[in-house]
Amino acid sequence: MLDSKTIEELKQKLLAEKKRLEKNLAPDESAKPGVDREYQTKFSEIERDEEENADEMEIYESSLATGETLKTELQKINSALEAIEKGTYGVCSNCQKEIPLERLMTYPQADTCLSC
Image (cartoon, rainbow, N blue to C red):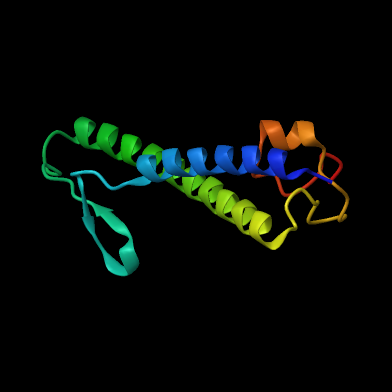
């Protein structure tokens, strides 16, 4: 079982990563609020050169995929923080065995052991 000092250290890692992800997920000037707090990109010059439009769309799609990955990681961090509060942190969600400390130190939002 993890001691309180180790849990606090891991919690601080999680909070730091959460802050970094939230900063990276913040909408920029090219976005405007949409429905349900989602953001829509504004393409100010969509009718210009077709090749430029294609490049812009490719960058947008890549950014969209990256954003979804960041959101998933943020959800995992929030789940780990909830598990700390509940006292279930560090236990594999599949087999209920303890997740090795080395794994948690490397990836504190891990919710499964390496076997699972």
